Image (cartoon, rainbow, N blue to C red; front, side, top):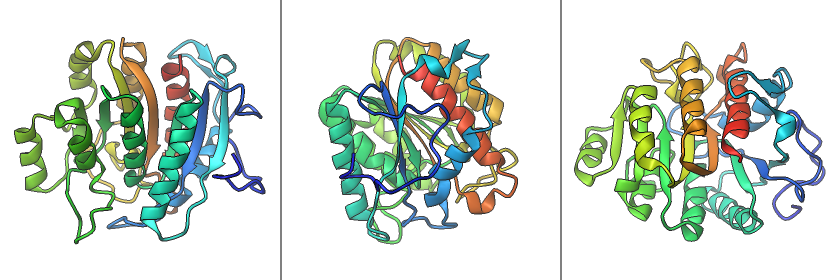
Length: 292
């Protein structure tokens, strides 16, 4: 895809990536943007570090009894953005996603700040008007704006609620946000589950059987003990084991996952690479579990 990606790029690709997109069921792509973060920047380096960490993975998942050779996927690299221009960068994501979905590919996005999920959700909704969202995160991301900016990493889920209807958005693990965000969640009819992920998810999945679902995961849902390498770390999170189990519950359920992303890995704060290592494993399990 020369229109979106730098053809001269010779960096890492996710382990066992196929050489060609044409024969791929799924496409991994990076969204290296962190222009609106409110605390610590650096997530634009996340996609490549996840790829590098994937080299240490086994290609077989004992959880799902599947091997990566069973899924045809292509790592397209990172999208090229005009540095510092959030609006144009989101436009590039939207255009790319429209092209990718038009080809019938399953998208797996690597962030980047969480705002990058917004144009993906927007494009999906144009093609899948009955779309549902599973959102796993420490933060509500339900602000209308941050410091006067409507394009902010704290706004994508509010934008999604306003687009597809709050009753179609399911948030898990939420433990941080303004009072007004929690009030909005309660009054709007969206489904917010505070602090925990796995148990409430198990209860919700039967209600979503047969539904088309986009899954977006912010790595900061994990406690900083498991994922220090993120821009807005929040104490009191879940373990890596719980997030793995949550991914597997979705994979084994009857929901129809149509796409997914994992965002907010920030390598500058990840000295032992434990965050990137965990993220690469989550991506492997999503590849094997979500791509049918």
